[in-house]
Structure formats: structure tokens, C-alpha cells
Amino acid sequence: MMPELGKYAVEVTAAYAVSLLLLAVIILWTVMRARRVKAELDAAEARAGKEAMDA
Image 1 (tube, rainbow, N blue to C red):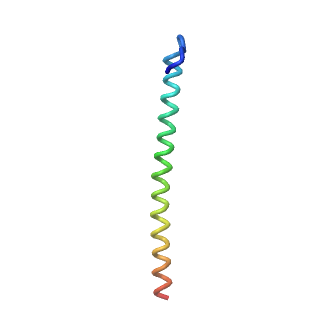
Image 2: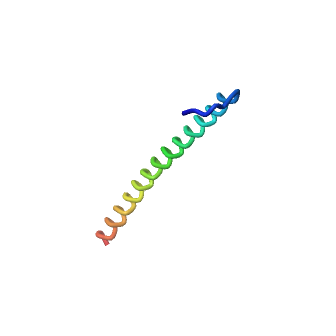
Image 3: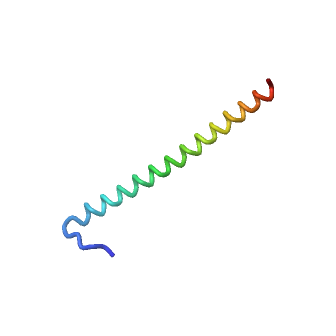
């Protein structure tokens, strides 16, 4: 159900599309960064555990 937007229909629809695209990009970037940071943290914890065993 699309409300009647009159002569501004194209602009309003484009604004919604751009907003949704930006939200999708931000969410994707956040998920990718979280995975990368988790992998780095796991690697650091593994190194710290190995160093503790060697000591």
C-alpha cells in the first residue's frame, strides 16, 4: 500500500531506497567488523594461553 505522494513520489521513494541501502551497508559492515575483532581476540587469547603454558 503506497500512499499518494503526488509529484514528489520519485523523490520520496528514492529517499527511502537510499536510506534502506545505507542501513544494509552499516549492518553488513558491523557484522563483518565484529567477526574480524572476534577472530583477533581468539588469536590473542590463544597466544596468551600458550605463553602461560610455556612459562
